[in-house]
Amino acid sequence: MKVTLKVFRFNGERDYLPHYDTIEMEIDEKKDVVLDVLNRIKWEHDGSFTYRRSCRHGICGSCAIKVNGRSTLACKERMEDMVALFGTELVLEPVSKKRAIKDMVVDKSDFWERYERVKPWLEAEIDEHPTMENIIPPEEAEKLEESDYCIQCGCCYYACPVIEVNENYLGPAAFEKAFRFTADVRDHAKRERLEIVDRLGEGVWDCVKCFECAEACPKHIDPIGKITKLHNEIFKEGVARSNVATRHAVGFKHSIKKHGILDEGHLVAYSEGFGVLKHLPEAFEMWKKGKIVMPWEMPKSKKLDEIKKLVEIASTVRF
Ligand code: SF4
Ligand code: SF4
Ligand code: FES
Image (cartoon, rainbow, N blue to C red; front, top):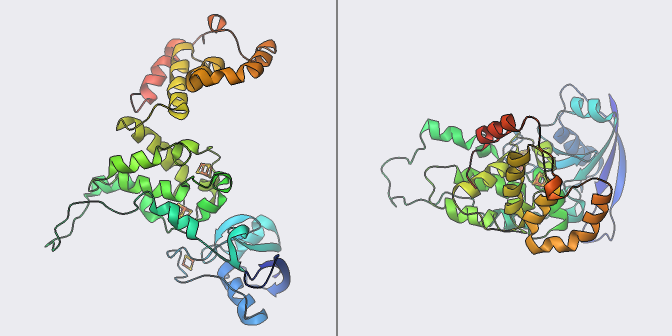
């Protein structure tokens, strides 16, 4: 099969702007993975073409790129699947164009700096010269879920829209790792780590729940699922500070339990406290259009008793 590749080219030492090379190539779509195509661009078309790869088995995390805007682990992604998804014209780009150093290679320093802030290691009192391994029991290992499979490829991080607008946000890979160690019974820094991810502006409360990280993860780790678990742990361990985000979570539950439906007006007032005053002009417009009601006019669901029971069953933590 013949494919047409548009390949992102940029040399940070020389170029002001990137350009794209167009390359036509015969591929064996049944056998080739995206990394085979990258290799052939270098070996057969331009020896200066630059990309990262090491293990070729989906475990080192170095070969992440984007194909037609979709985050991909080049050594794992089959060309057959790419062609089925996008057709025979494929655009190969680095995971983050603004961080490109040379062609597919990006500067990952901000990724590592934020990753390190959650203490991505086991904190435990261990004998300097242990005579046996410090093994986690199998039933406890299950609680880590698949979080141990993260290969730090950064696909989730570079797909996250909050990373692009908030330079303090730790990002899905760091949260995934924070979950991995807070869920480990051998770890002694659970509370400290939860305090880090609880911070407004940096932590899990700034996630906008777009699920891009789950879509992007080549190891199917579901970082947004881990973020939700960290939300719960933050409450469970009594780490939650009273702020607009935590009050929003609490107010949401109270509203559903009280009315069986969401009282939008009360939720904003509860979450923001006196800050609600700045929303008065919009609230007035919404009230005029019947989008919010006065507290004394708030209707209740006909199935309120049933909903109350469901809220009780679904509640895993006490606020
Ligand atoms: S769900 Fe949250 S962490 Fe994941 S990509 Fe969206 S904003 Fe980022
Ligand atoms: S969570 Fe998935 S996408 Fe994110 S760094 Fe780990 S393996 Fe890569
Ligand atoms: S080369 Fe190691 S994950 Fe692809």
